[in-house]
Length: 414
Ligand code: NIG
Ligand code: FE
Image (tube, rainbow, N blue to C red; front, side, top):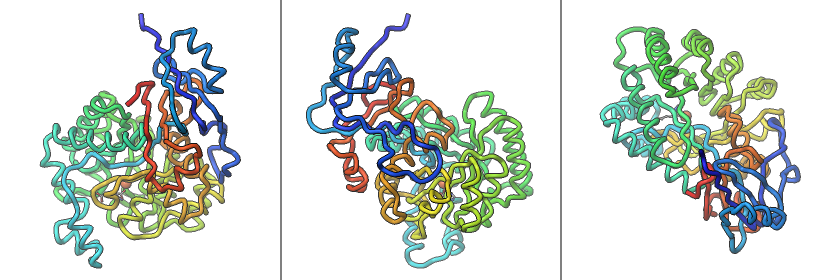
């Protein structure tokens, strides 16, 4: 018989529940549900009740709850969610970064041995245990920043065996960190240089030989593709995505990073999310706003490459849903600081606190098709982050420098 464990956390000056917000469109701070002098009562791994601390206290005492007594000022948010990363990789691309900043082109960098293929080479060389160790290290760094759910893409293996090695590494890493790692297949990242045959044959080898293993072993239920001139065209990807849909995978797309085209594919395939969108024009913005596909801004990639931000304001005003993720990867987004990047995107794109915070909590959960997290609501996973401040607006105001003092994952203090 499972023993029941209750925990009461509080008093919390402000609990920002992120509950009751529309999934799509612009948000005002006044729409936030803020409970002052809050308590959060946890039952095992779930949130049992959220309310006034002093109202919850007697019940918590009578059921023998563990009391996490907070002294001082704290703001609670749902555990943060990074819905787009590539943290399973080996090696560094510091040379690419320096070359890019010296004005070298994508092609010049690739010719000097840089680019995504360099990371593929380094990642293939690394043993699975090494990838596990690197992924856990990065996940734990995120966890310290209050990020309790982290999407992790494959895509640096680019062969049947090497992609599966990445998935097994991500699965093992997931068992060695308190954060939840949500794996995504990005075998369609770039066409592998060493594949003997046409791009479509490569994609077919992945859909024939990797997809069934992902299903059978529960290694991933999301399929991603990079649609871009230097990667895959919408035509290349058509039957690949069709197969993925038939097999019941969720679709997500690296879209409109440098050229448009990807977001249209995302919408056609009913993708859960279309990510990047730095190059999206009013046409793509309108398409996304009229769809159920969530737009994901990746400000870390704009900072890493020195390019414009995703038009987040326009997307929200048009009525799209907007999540914000770090894109943490060795090439375009080496920083991996989700909160800092989301806050800075807010200043450049004129986003409300509610829009920034929804982008890294409830809307990020939706971008992963996860409905058990992203809000401080009864029945949700007890993923909670506590910031040492009395005013939630300090979190974006301090642009990522205000670090959480405590976080809970599945009801466990981490
Ligand atoms: O999301 N755009 C394509 N893929 C990654 C970059 C990966 C890399 O450069 O290693 C991105 O930015
Ligand atoms: Fe990415």
